Image (tube, rainbow, N blue to C red; front, side):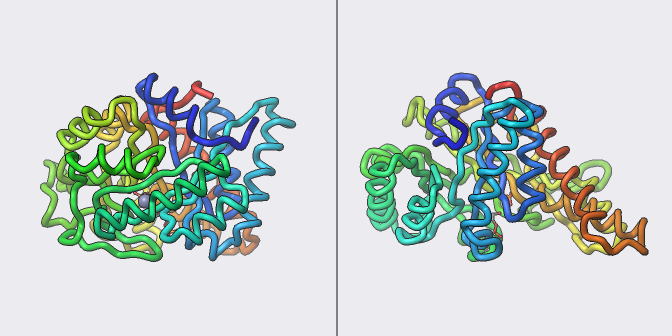
Length: 327
Ligand code: G3H
Ligand code: 13P
Ligand code: ZN
């Protein structure tokens, strides 16, 4: 078993009222930290690779590292760790095809910035190729604000998903899951201070997610798995450690965890988390180096960095996604 599609994972998640975590991977320590948490928590897992991650680490290195994680789980933990290997934000048919041909079990075609008819047409082409090869497809309707390596979308150019479009989109494309925009956003600066209020401690409180949009979409697509991108919570304790150890991340703000937990209990079956892993690893490495100024062996600071990833992922699985014990 081991490297699988998300089909079965999503069915169980939908029926069980939880979500599977989709974590972005870029190197060995990140993959090890995430997989160690998944093994300990007996949790199904989606490891996702962006176009930028492929450029940084090379497709084959990431694929082999993930295969190694599966083999390691089997041999050393006696556990058949189900991992779905997913392309995050594929922006063309060629990129999706290359990932499918290279062993991924799931791809996202993100043509959400294109006009509706064009989004349908590109998604349909990717679905045809993917399904022929036993691979599943995530598509997107609506546009999230925020910054990724390859794209930057301003708050003004972002738009919520229009529920009245989802049935036509899903039936015409044949996609297996749908990412929607209900107010989440990519990166560690999801909202400007002007878009937020402040609580009594002066901490920024973001505008709430649009659960009315999610509910309307779910009503129109009963039983269909919904995906949330941009779902890091930007824990303030990690931002503080970074800022106290030479970093500069003013006004970083994320999505409150209790809102994600609520989304996971509804039709949201996949929740994407990248920025919180980056924050955990960076905070731990900055703190380690500040406390051990004479150390210079990368293993010395990457070890706590890897542990910080593991702790963060375990916390998400247990307290936010509810997917622990479900593998
Ligand atoms: O949604 C984007 C992910 O966080 C990946 O980011 O494009 O910088 O690798 P990246
Ligand atoms: P965050 O930046 O909120 O972690 O979102 C990651 C994501 O959506 C990857 O596709
Ligand atoms: Zn995303």
